[in-house]
Image 1: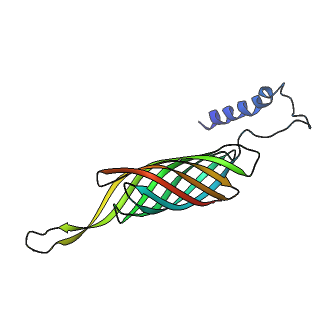
Image 2: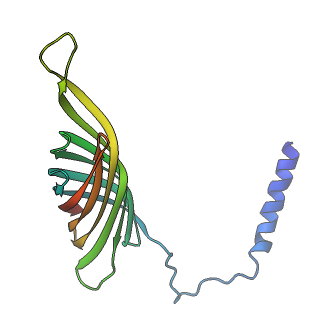
Image 3: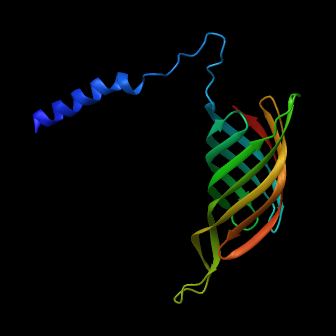
Length: 182
């Protein structure tokens, strides 16, 4: 077994120069740029939303930027609203920056994922107790948003539409967020 491995290694080692024969070196004046540049991006935005519910939201996205135009990442947020006391959205985010010669870069943003909602239900009744008892509730739901806006250096502004759910109730509306991109 060891002899076969050694023979295969020797054949590959000796065949490498033959396979590279006829290839030219890159001239000094030719660009050697690679096709895509990938870098890390952190986005944080805060804002308000209204429609089926009124509330405040803060989102954080860890992602990768491809050629400084497309950002794909995983986001997590924190929301306080009138439907559920607190929510934690966890989602996949895609953001595209349109190219331009100016400092102001238009963008579109899409996100879809789940939303964990936490609230206290005061209408729960124990059969042995006359007074209502509070019960903590946790339910998963939908989190989706579609927004447009702009970025100026690190500052970003977006506004758009959302669709969320809380305990089998779906609601939508508009949202406005401001934040920073690092």
